[in-house]
Image (tube, protein in one colour):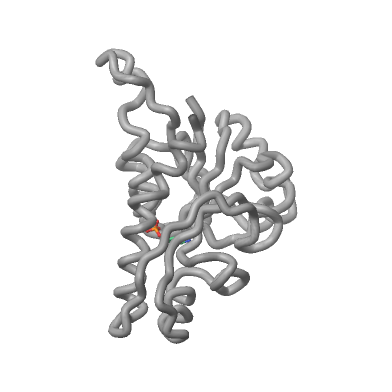
Length: 198
Ligand code: GRF
């Protein structure tokens, strides 16, 4: 069973879905004779005190590692803590800091991000959250979607694993599009992760 750390700094709705997909904790799965879960969310990593995802972690009994800029970007990038927690994969679910080389080197092809648009369009520095949806609506795109990809040293650039699309309607606002994209993320992200962990 693979051990996952979710890096998030927002509400954590994707984190919630990923935790739900993991299902029963290993011990109860064994007791009830069910198949073992293929992954376990062992750690939530967060850079924003007070973020919704911290409350989620408390509710789900998952330890939280709060991180700070200096050690993350100019130190060891918390590699020691992640290895100590036995982390196999890192999932970025609404984490806005760039991933430093030290972390990429420690987890090659094991760091996965979700981006709320169809990369390579609407990616790169400054293209996050509502900025993405605003740009898509303003440009009157006919469709948008989600991209799940490996993380490399550039923003929103690594190899694409999965994409799904949804329509953008003339009457869409940034908010209505954001809701549609969120639903698409919740539908696909946990399943794609589970597939990769097999
Ligand atoms: C998602 O839309 C994700 O694509 C983006 O940040 C948002 C996180 O939302 N990178 P949540 O915290 O999972 O609700």
